[in-house]
Amino acid sequence: MKARYLLSLLLCVLLSACGFHLRGIIEIPEWLNNVSIISRDGDKDLISKMKTQLEGYKIDVNPDPSKAKYWLIINKSNVHQQIISIGASTTPRQYQLIMTTVFSLQTPTGQVIKTPKQITVTRQLTVNNNRILGSNEEENILLSEMHQDTVIQILNRISHK
Image 1 (tube, rainbow, N blue to C red):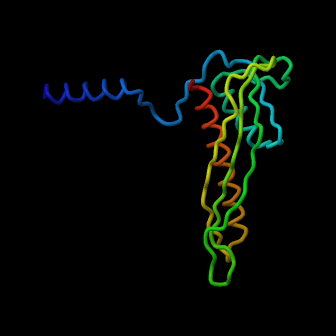
Image 2 (cartoon, rainbow, N blue to C red):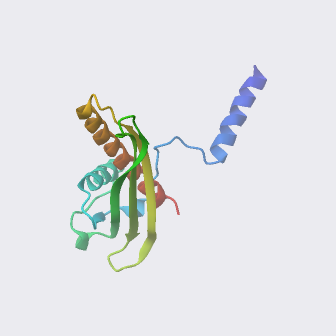
Image 3 (cartoon, helix red, strand yellow):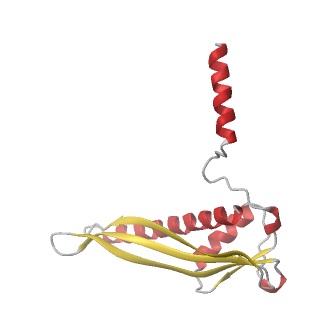
């Protein structure tokens, strides 16, 4: 009994010492408060999810860049499809959706906090020719998940030096 308790305690200490933490838990630095999100290509869904996520971490998102302490700049965000497999009738059966986003963090005076970094998120989409509307809805769901994953990765990279 005592050995089992000590083994459990040792395991907990080792896991906490290595920096292990659950996925999705990000410690956003307090200095990032009062940030403005600037999009160079106008990806409204990504900006909306980023704003919601930052506000969830109690970070003030300022809509006016001239009044913000920091600028989170989304330089580029695009999605393209790549055909993975083709069916017997020579129509595409599977696509790979690839979202590429480039972001940087700087002050209004031009001091670069985070140099431009690129994030790539991929998902596979299987097209069912019998249910085209369902496939379109599935694609929209995947794109929404990809935006959310991109936001989490951006915040993760900002929070680490």
